[in-house]
Structures are given as C-alpha cells and as structure tokens.
Length: 452
Image 1 (cartoon, rainbow, N blue to C red):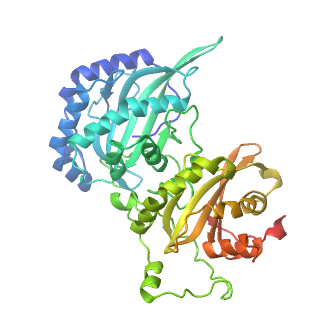
Image 2: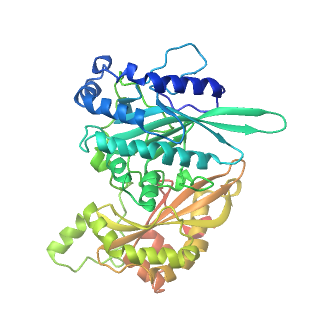
Image 3: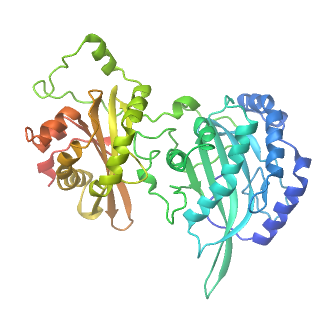
C-alpha cells in the first residue's frame, strides 16, 4: 500500500464501488494467515484472527456520517474492471514497525472552496478514524503484538471555477503508537492534539501537521515528531508507504517497542563539551543525589511535569504571546544526556532570507535579538527545582526566498549558566559556550560576533 500524491477523477464510480463493498463485505471475510509470507505478520494474523473478524463486523455495522467501506488497497482505480478487496484490516510493516492497519473508502465529497485541506482531514479524523479507534479498543487487546495502529482513508474533494469543475481523491493516513492509539479514545481535546503532533500523519503522501478544527495545518517542522530529537517514533525520509504483509521489513537497526516509542526522548547528538571548571564547579551533594542526577528517568520527568503543570499552563496563558510560544507544543520535561531538561518552543517573528544569511548568522541573530532579551523575564517565571538542570529553547525561523520554509535553532542551556547570564555575571558568548546549539538537529559551534 502506498501513500499516493495527487488527485484522481471518478467520484461517481467510487460511490458505486463503496456501495457494493458495503453490501458484500462479509463475503470477503478477513485476510487469511495462509496468504501472509512474513513469519511475524503471519503469526499475528493467526493469533488475532477472531478479534480482527469481530472488528471487521463492528465497522461494517457502524453508522458514519457518510458510507464507509473497508478496502485493502485504497489506491485501486475504481473505474477499472478489477476485483476490489474489502478485507481492509491486517498486520503490515511500515518504517520497520509492525502496524495493525485499517484502510477504506469514505464516500464523502468535500467542497474545497469551503473547507481547507486541514479542515477536510480534521473531519475524516473525527468522523471516521476516531469511531474506528473506539471499536479497536473494544475488540483488540491492549497488549496486542504490534507497534502501531495505522489508517489509510480515501475521500473526495470538489473544486470549481469558471473554467473547470473538478473532483478528485485525497488520502489521509495516520500511524499512531499503540499506547497513544488506545489513550486517544478517552483523551481530552488537548491530549488528542498532543498525540497527533507526535504521530505520523500524511495527506496524499506528504507529511502533514493535522490541527484539529483549524483552518490551516501546523508547521510540520515544528511538531514533536519533526523537531530533531523529539520524535517519538523516528521515521524514514519521505512519507514512504505501508508495505504488503507478504514482505519483510528492510534491514535496519531494531525499531523501538511500542512502550519505548511512546516516550518523548532525544536522539543523542555529539557529546556535550565540558565547560570550564570555574564556570561549572562540581555539585556539592550527597552520593545518592549525585547518582540520581546522573541517571534520571522519564518517570522523573513525568513527575516534574505533573508537579509544575499548573505553573507552566499559567505561564503560557499569561505570557505566551510576549514570549512567542507556539500554541501546539506546550512546555515539557524530558531526559536529555542524563539530565532533566525543560523544553520550550518559540517562534522568532523575524523573517530570514536564505540568500543573504547562513545557519550560523541566523542562529546568532535569533539568539542576540530575539531570545537573549527575553531570558531575564522568562527565567523569573520558570519552575524552581534542583532537578531541572537545563532549559531547551527551540526557536523556529521563518525562511524567505525562492521557496519559503523554516528551520529550528535549539539552545540547550544549563540552568546555572542561564542564571549567571541573567544576573549579568557572564556574557552571551559565555552562555553559548556552556550550551549545546543545534540547527535542525545538527550541533554547531557558534561565535556570535564572528557571524554578525
């Protein structure tokens, strides 16, 4: 199965096919384990076959706003005389992970002049994917032997002008970590958006930042799955496709398990250069406290998140505009290089021209002119805890030029160095020297004066 780009004709034939599939879905039953060559996928299909059949039947009798029919191959051209396979539930490989995939045809045709692509995708998520996820939670055990739950839903969008009237196909695909998929069913609106931000979402094969009930999608490069090191489940370059259940996954290092993939963790960049001894004296603490600081766990980060959530929420609500926080990536605690780090994502309102600047110059200007002037006020409002050892400021840049895009400059600064800087004890270059600076996930050396 592929994530296909572009739009296709044949809306009326598609309606006919969908109707036929709804009336004869039971004839096709479920994908048989005997059809699957890959040993792990074959075993999963055999083990959960009764549950898959029950899920198939539950979806078939569920009332959606428009008719929905399971279809194994959503890229099939409905106007061609080829047999349609309504067995749209099976275990497949996608980006080296085992996915329980649900795919089908939704007979809705949205007016593209009235609903944006993001609004159309949002409706598919609410009207089709969410009800099916509830059925998955009812029929499939939570300890199912797979990494993700995936969807591929095809629907139609209609647009017209004085010169043409056109209706074409769109495909919304989503791959959610197994823990997130089950959690989403009873999640709050904010929690659902957080789950989508770290999940893999595609429209017509292109990475997509689905923003629930908003006109426009989020900037993909700023989301948790795209900001370097924040990806819950690392994806291969490009949208890729969900491979057939008869194929083996490509050779690669083992993918994280479902439980591990649900954690927010950073990819380890080059080792942090130790700052000068006079700037960072050894911790004067008991051996037990030192050991704890050397190896904090994600549970420690989650505990701090719960402890300071109300304070962080108040900060965002009261000062979010002043500090230019993005509204879809709330402050969060993570473990990075065996330290607990508090992450913030901000957007620099300046527009940078790629033709007249470099990544070094943009990072320097963003720090000197945007971030540094706000640090003193921001540090006064942050949670106070000896467990928080660094603050990660991820600053998003808007890049103008022949093709508009964006980039992320990250400044991971030790809390002690930040306090020294905001107390006028060290210079901005001293702070940078004691910090880790990343541009799109690549660590750089930054000399503020040399690139100005």
